[in-house]
Image (tube, rainbow, N blue to C red; front, side, top):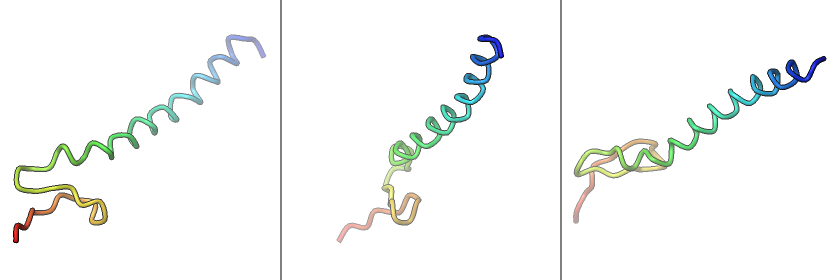
Length: 53
């Protein structure tokens, strides 16, 4: 195998890993996308209405 082939194979292997890492990191930002009057509930995995007592 030539060096170009090895580098191309490494690049093609790394791309899906980098895409997965980017997608997984976006989960931490979901709390910023809740509407006003709601907050992120990690156990439910969604925004829930804020209840004031």
